[in-house]
Image 1 (tube, rainbow, N blue to C red):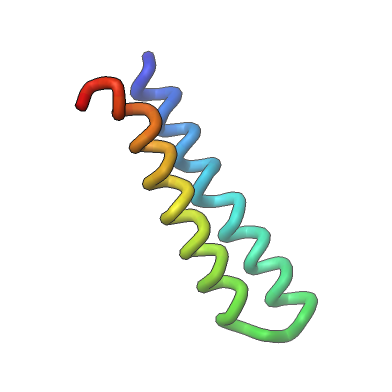
Image 2 (image 1 turned 135 degrees about the vertical axis):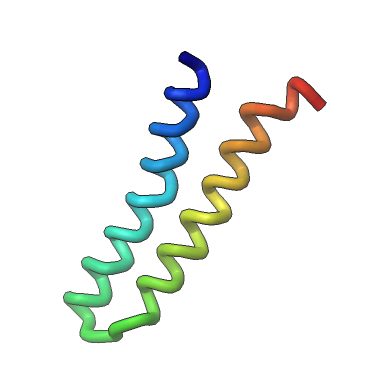
Amino acid sequence: MELLGLAVLLAAVFVVPLIVGLVIDGAAHTTPVFLLVGILVGVIGAAATVYTRFKRYL
């Protein structure tokens, strides 16, 4: 059950900045800039989430 919760958390941590980047790009007409920033923030957030969840096993 813990892994299912982690999967949902990782999806949210990655998808939310991605969608926010898309919305900002649509409003500001700067096509790939904020999308790439959103992807970068999502990847860093997902890595930090995995690290904090599994650092007790290291």
